[in-house]
Length: 275
Image 1: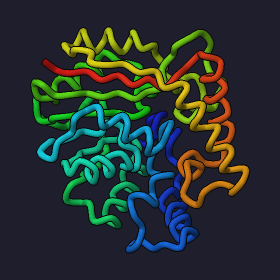
Image 2: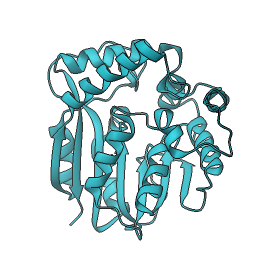
Image 3: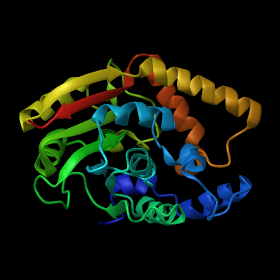
């Protein structure tokens, strides 16, 4: 995977692991004492953090015998959470080498290498056999994937019959594009926002049945309001999303929240089943 890929370029910081180690030290922890809960604020690079992850993944009925695929896994926060929460095996794939290498290091710290495997890869070319996966999910990933049809077909291919695919993405629900930068793109060239109907149509064209859909805009605004209040009182947490997003984090969040508040975009959950 070439690191010149514009998506990878947007997300690569260059010193991510060192910044996380520094945050761990600020918490008064070490690589031997850090926990999944401690890493949550930096681990969950999507609206709502760990709370959103739990509410979303609970809908996928993940069992201990399931092989679960985390598409666009980032540094593996949701992968580790799923493996720990549901006692399942998780494979994560991501385009950004720095995310994958950092995620592997964190899995090692937590002793989770036997249940969580992270590797460099593309959502449009998943390196798994047909029908090898029981459940699949992606959290805030589709905004970087223009070809929703190819994505839907590829996930369909790797899922077994009866398998579940969950999506939690920021989607276009009104008119107007967000100002840039935003968390998923530095400019409009890197953004592939689409309406929920586009997702549904492509999922159904691939053969999926839509199980449920939920708009999380109100939840998102409440989440960011609470985050702003905490930041005003306590400052940025030692392990927070500013580590992932870099120095432009305030502008990225501000632009995204403004667009959600205007009703132009919203975080949407979609859950689909392969018959």
